[in-house]
Amino acid sequence: MADEIIAFAVQPEDRAELDRLVAIVGGGDRSEFLREAVRVMAIRERAERLGRLQAGIHAQVGGPKTSEQVTEDVRHVVKGK
Image (cartoon, rainbow, N blue to C red; front, side):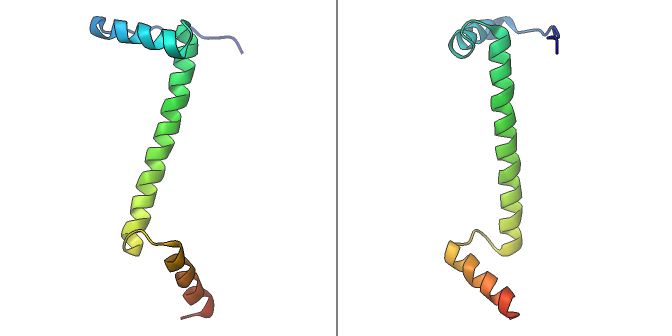
């Protein structure tokens, strides 16, 4: 698949930081920097989504539980209590 050129604007006050990060993360290659930034942001978004899911589960079950509590809950379900 051929690369697609996408133009976007950068605020002048952000340019120095962008250039610094491109040098560190992308080895001076803005395309490589953007690929890595997209990868990292996708990971971050998944982690945030999982955190929200976990918070919802904790709200439903009355807060986080220890492994022992989970094991005991499973035993109650399996035994039909």
